[in-house]
Amino acid sequence: MINEIALNDWYPVAMASELKPGCRLNRVLMEREIQISNDGDKTHAFEGSRVLPLQIRYDHVWTSLGAPARPLFEIPEGEQDGRRLVACGRVHVRCSPLRAVENFLDIAHFPYVHTGILGAEDHPEVERYDVEIDDEKDEVWARQVKFFQPQAAKSAEGGIMADYMYRVPAPTTSILYKTCPARVGEWDIITLFVQPVSETTCDVWPWMALYDDETPFNDLVQFQQTIFMQDRSILENQIPALLPLDPKMETPTRADLTSIAYRRWLKRRRMFYGAQTIAA
Amino acid sequence: MTQQSPSPTAKPSSSWIPVALSAGFRPGSNIRVFADGNDIALWSSFSGKLSAWVNRCPHRGMRLSHGFVRGEMLACIYHGWHFAQDANCKYIPAHPELVPGEMICAQAHHAHEQDGLLWVSCAEEEPDAPARLPGFGVRSLLIDAPRPVLAGVLEVTHEAQGRWELTLADQPVILGVQDWPEGRTGVHLLTKEAVSAETKKMLSRELEAMRRTCEAIAPVSASASASVPSGPSSRSGDAA
Amino acid sequence: MSFAKIEFYGTFDTRHFCDWIGHRAHKLGLTGRIEAASSERITLYVQGQEELLNAMEVACSLGPIDADVSHTNLVFIDPADASDWPNRFQIDVGPEVLADRR
Image 1 (cartoon, helix red, strand yellow):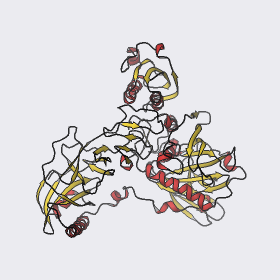
Image 2 (image 1 turned 30 degrees about the vertical axis):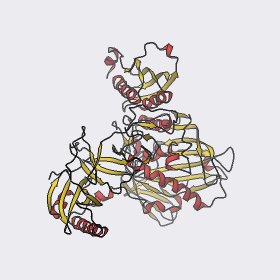
Image 3 (image 1 turned 180 degrees about the horizontal axis):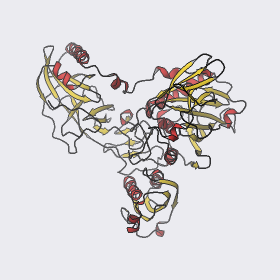
Image 4 (image 1 turned 90 degrees about the vertical axis):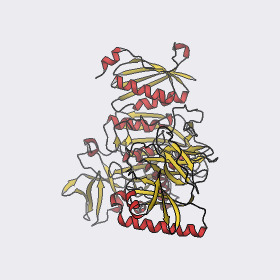
């Protein structure tokens, strides 16, 4: 069931670069068929004959099935000069859109799922980090996150202790701030924009804003797609398919603090699309 | 023949279900099987001890059949939680100093190896072993047709505890029969006596022919096949 | 072995949340007791390995579906400051909690 909260949010449905003049894209958003078209002058979104709100930001097209209760979140760092903006395309995943976001917030799986790239089995320990639900901004933040990475990014050579921050500005969006190998003191930004196709399927649109002028575009996209393909084998095999908001059957530990805060935030703002609200 | 249509709410039966052939299931193997509609991780430790567990990591619900065997333990692929033979969690990599308590554990069913087959029971109490019927494993196949279709196609001369006895290409054979979700059936073919590689190859072809016959009678509905997780889809590569 | 006082603040069905906490303590193999409980605050004393006490706080910060936990507080304590440690987890919070059930 789509509740008001889910209906009235903004969702990504295409890359801006797909909007060639005269094009017409068919997409599914929360089980409803919508169309995105470009008449050579402007881009429009429709559900049948109904015009949907639309905006183009962060290299993607955003729309809503309802009346958006708040403006699209800001990513100020993503609009700084000197960054490479990389839209990585779409990955279809047979999982709850909320599970895709939750997995993105998780570092403890790096040694096993992204072995040799984002983690190493001989460095699995998760150090204490800070998690906060910012009630004023209505966002989840994780800070002071540190994790050993044998290859932190395409431009990184050898292992480092990488620093991260995670930000969840909307239920289906996660932003990762990560140590920038090329520019000390700055953060690279990797985001996951998730389009809920149904409660148990989603399209994921990774987008990056990096300080990296060296690495070929295709290599950057390929790196991110490799990572996400590895995640997908996890996401399509978690039980139950919906994200449980009562973890009675699960055993979270301190390393799962971001995941638990995210679920607590979803529960509090009653974002139940893709969530399981009975104990499981 | 009792018809069992597996569903997530299926009640545990008291019997053993043949879920795989012993042959080829080497130490260190870990596969996904179904018994009485229950999703199960069947794995063998390096020393050859067989276990059948509820296919769900108690940490965050990942299917344990995707995990890896390390020595006498099974590790979940998601966060590397290690579980010993007694199903208790012994190691949580994110917290290496922690010694998990006995209540942090996977849930075990019963597993048994006999007569060339691996058996699982979801009963509370371990049932008596199946009656002896020695066999030599040839091949397992997953068929997109429910059990009654197979029963109609094959001339079964005797059946007991999930095993059908019949003649296939003039060879007396045993077929272990296992219900899968969505109207599928797993079959495990064994010969009653040791046979040549040539005969095995021939029987294997016969089994494939039998599968084609059954699937022609009962094509799996499009919706059922669509809900089976597939590999990377063509929609994944449309990067800018 | 560590000892901690953990407090949960928010809005909950007290009895339901207390049972949930008891179930979690059992699952993590912790001993201790719920010392005070209302529909806005639950205080417990628990004993176990440090990471399991952390796990207790993390799991209960989400809690059952009808609990809205606004914040939590965990303080490690000297065992001498919490007398009469039970050898299991006890929920003996008295009739006022049952009366609180809505």
